[in-house]
Image (cartoon, rainbow, N blue to C red):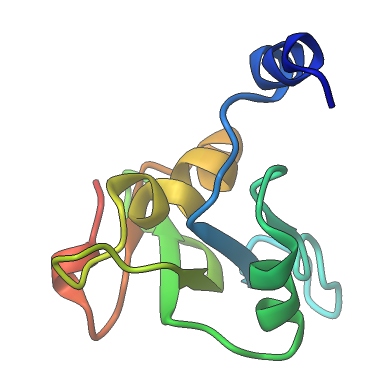
Length: 120
């Protein structure tokens, strides 16, 4: 792809997400017996190799997205490339909320068992 087309694609889609991917495993807002948004993966620029790990059932962490009243909206998994300090990037930690949850009205993402990853 030439540089002009690459720059245009980044303007339309945003910068590539090179270090994380996520999947919605449970849509807690779905009607009983429905799957709702379960199975949704993102972000749209997620690397194929990380999406493949999610499809295989792998995850570096479980995430849960809540609204400002504490209602649980979604539960899922995150795979990411850790930085030198052993933590995911800020974009990766906030990804399930910023990429997906905010559109549904969520305001916080929590990582059970990894409270230092939580992002309000």
